[in-house]
Every structure is written in structure tokens, then in C-alpha cells.
Length: 88
Image (cartoon, rainbow, N blue to C red):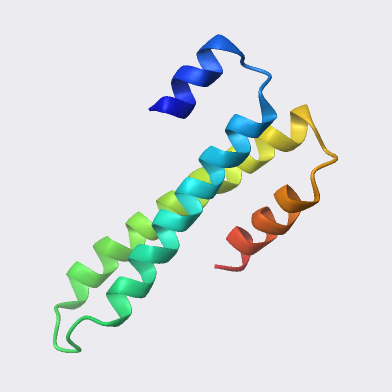
């Protein structure tokens, strides 16, 4: 929500998009790793729902990285993190 508020003030703030993308990426990776530790006997439908959340956060993350890149394409860390999100 803070990133969204920041972008309402300055919609061309590539750093805000970058940080928002990082937050979504970290959330997805944390959730993905947390699910690996769950009991093997867990129902498949529950796992599928949780995997959908991970994919949703990864897609949102990539969208924020894309928006940041459109504003400022000279951010090596942005490209690294965007690539990392695409790998998952």
C-alpha cells in the first residue's frame, strides 16, 4: 500500500516500482519455500491453490519490474531481480 501511495504522488518513480516488485518476489519465494516443508500427505487441491498464489505474486512482481524498466532502463539490479522472478 505504501508503494501505491508513493506512486500516486510520483507515478514516474521507477525505484518505487522496483521495490514493490522486490516485495512481491520475496513474498512469492517465501511462500514457495514454506510450502516445500508441508506434509507430503497434504491434499493436492490445497497445494494447487497455494501454487496459484505464488504464480500470481510472481506475475505481479514481473509487472512492477517492467513498469520500473519503462521509466528507467539503466538499473542492473532491476534486470537481475526481474530475471530471478522469471526463473521461478
